[in-house]
Every structure is written in C-alpha cells, then in structure tokens.
Amino acid sequence: MLSAQKKFQEKSQKIGTHNAVVLSLAQAFNGSIGAIAVSIGALAGAWLSPQNLALATLPVAAYNVGAALFAYPVAMLARKFGRRVSFMIGAVIGIFGAGLSALALQNNSFSLFCLGFFMVGGANAFIQQYRFAAADIGTDKFKSRAISWVLTGGIFAAFIGTETVLRTKDLLLPIPFAGAFLGMAALLVIGIGILAFLKPTEPVTEKVHADTEPARPLSTIFKQPILIVALLCAVSAYGMMTFVMTGAPLAMQHHGHSEVEAVLGIRWHVLAMFGPSFMTGLLIVKFGKLPIIGTGLALLMVCAAVALNGLALWNFWWSLILLGVGWNFGFIGATALLNEAYRDSERNKVQGLHDFILFSSVAAASLASGAILHNFGWNGVVMVLFPVCGLAILSLFWLKMSNTRMQKNCDNNQININISEGL
Image (cartoon, rainbow, N blue to C red; front, side, top):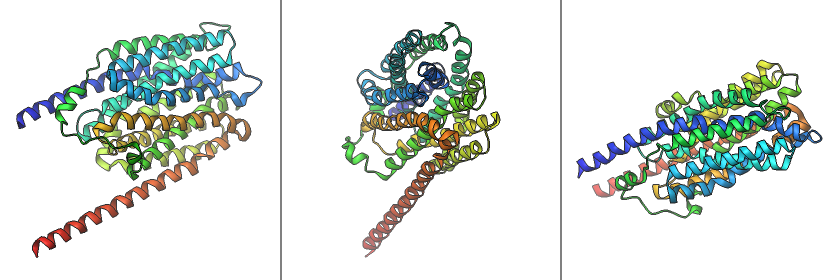
C-alpha cells in the first residue's frame, strides 16, 4: 500500500514538473499579449479618442473587465474539459480579439477596439489560470516553486511582447499600432502548439487524494481570515500595479518622453514583474508567505516615492521596475497563501471567484488610472499606492496575530486534555 502511494506521488511529481515547464513556455508566448496590450492600449486609445483623453485607458479597462468576466467560466471549463483544452480555447478567443483590435484601428472605431481588448482580456483570464494549474499537484513547497517557474515565463514574455510591438506596430501604416495585433495573433498560435504538450493531472490527483473532504459553501470558505487577507493582498498588489502601469505610457509621453521610451519602460517593468520568479518560491519557503507579501507591498510604496521624486526618464523607469518587483513578491505570495484556504474539492470554484473579484478590481483600477491622470496628473496617480498598500500590510499583521492567538488556544486545549488524562 505504501509502495503504491509512493509510486503515485512520484508520478504526480513528474507530471507536475513537466507541466510547470510547458506552462512556463506557454506563459512566454501567450503571456506576451499582456505586455502588448498594456504598452500600446492607452496610446492607441488616445489616438482613437483624441477629443477625450480621460477615456484613453478605457481599452485597458475593457481588457481587465474581460479577464474578470471570463475568470469563473474559465475555472468551470477547466473542470469539465481539463486544463489543456480550456487553455487552447482561451488562446483562440485571444486570436479573435487581436483580429478585432486591428480591424478597429483600420476603421477608426473606438468601441470596436474596446470589444477587441475585452476578448484579449478574456484570453488573459485563461493565462492567469496557468499559475493555478502549476499548483494542481505536489507538496506545498513544490507548489510555491511551480508557481514561480510558470511566472518565470513572463521574463521572456516581456521581451517577446515589447519586441513584437516595436517591430510590427508600423506594419500597416498609416494606421498606427494595428500591425502589433497581427503579431499578437501569431504568438497565440505558437502558444496553442505549446499547450498541446500539457499532461492531465486529475487522475493522479484523485488517487493520491482519495480521502479529500467534501466541498464547503463559498460563503463559508470566504469567511476565513486567511482567504480574506490573501484576496486583499492580491487585489492590492495587482490593482495598484495595473493602476500605475496603465497610466505610465501616457504620462511619459505627456512629459516629453518618446513612444519608444514608453514601450521600453513597459519592457523593464514586465521584466521586473517576472524576473524575481527564479527565487520568489525559494524565498517563500525560507521566510514564509506573509513576510514576502509584506516586502512586495512595501516595494510598491517605494515605487511611489521614486516616482514622486521627479519626471526624468530614470524616475519613470526605476519606479516601473520597483512596481514590477513589488507585484511579483506580493502577488506570488498571495497566490501561495490562497492555496491554504481551500480543499482540493473546492479548487475550481474558489480560484474562479477569486480571479473574478481580482480582475474586477483591476478593471476598475485601470479605468480610474486614466481619469486620475487626466485630472490630477502623474503624482496624483502614484500617491494612491500609499493608503492601499498600507491597508494591505496592516491586514498581514492582523492575520499573523490571529494565527498566534489560534495557536495559543490550541496549545492551551492540548494542555487541558493532557491534565485531564493525567487525572
């Protein structure tokens, strides 16, 4: 019996490692659509709607609305058809979205462009599930590392996405940016080919975890302090990162920096988002989830301080780099923390609802970014990071104290039981 269980665990570990590699490669190509969308979304929005620049970030908001609304259906599709098929469906949706975006630019249609970005955002909802897919099986330590491995693919996505923009954005001149969306579609086709190598994990998971407890209602699951804090920190890290990143290209252009410098700034930012993934999992294992999340949130506040220091190119680039590293620590840590809040039988519905809430907040942040930038300037945008990240850091202290109290109560109960048995 022990030997059979060990074999299942070894098989599970091999499949988990294989899938983490495949998902990392898929992240490199499919994940590049995020770098493309963010680096030119607001710039293209401003070109399509020059009379109302406050709406320039609306396409990026539509992108995040798509990610939010597709989040729960993605989880259900994965449950019904498996990760591989559902992820391929997501890439196909992205290809249609990219085609619509290019068509919208050619026809000077702002509303159609937003619809295209909505579909691209829907594709991103599938890509966001890659990190959960990497943590489907294996030990807690392996899951943290697997999430990091997958997000490491974002390093290549930073280069692939921004390089695609720089090399293809002028292919369909005199229509700017349209060529970049043809490049996006080509990258998604490559991603589909990579996803074909993904192996199913459900059969192994069921045998190893045959004694899984029944699923609880969502109302019960979402009352847990650990889930509340994980969600708050994920929303803070991702929301504030998007809030600042969305407005950055417009702010750079407004303050005399070139379009190319704005795209390169996003490249440095995305590299910083995923570069630390090589070591984030190891740092979580060594120091724990809460300290790493706290460090990430603190770095977001440092990013704001650098941005407030001036409007030179280095201020923008360094603040975007700090923004990326802060997101990496905060978001990967929060994702790992979330894994402690649900049972295996609850995985799909919790992940789906979590990402729906997350990307609804992110969509609101990206839309607000344009309005605040237009009315209060770049300094007004970055100032928002201080109260939001400060609140999230306080929640970490609250969770730490709650866990300490719970541990003390358990220890006291155990002492009382021992005394009673002794009597």
